[in-house]
Length: 204
Image (cartoon, rainbow, N blue to C red; front, side, top):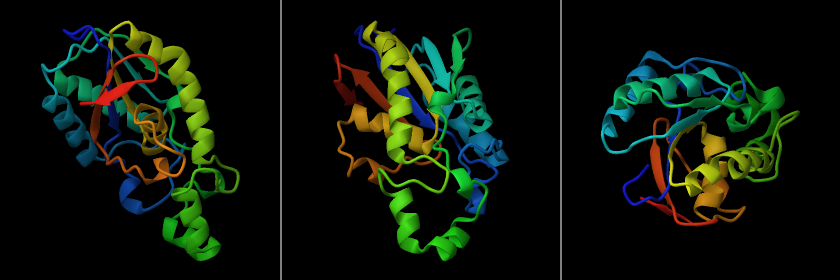
């Protein structure tokens, strides 16, 4: 619990995976962190050590986010709290593009089509999810499971992915459908929000 009694939400994008360097669409392919990613996650944890009393942690069903969470907690000295893994927090599902090189897909489908999917809200890759689809599943879970805990004044840590965190940012920063695809969250980036009441968050 925070000293002021207000809930805190700590969001961290997974650190570098072994596929991040390869310029491929990862999606739900379950790849691990690189050695650099593991070291980075520890550093992220060390940067917040002693700053927060974390009550509970959430992560996705994918190993790169789970490893990030474990190492952030290790670096921060966080132990003995409940940890929940749930697929609703997974990265966007990229369908037929998963495991494919982004440049090769641009050659096949055209730069505009790739841009529409990667930086649009409603466009889907073949057999995959749009950012809108991802936002719907992430927010349903957040609204039902996580936000009530923030309303109780708890401090919650979430380690997830670029697009699942974009989905959360849409709500937390009250972004439009045109604005949210432009949000860039770097590997290992930490964002902290204070819960100020229903649908009201302040970034700290």
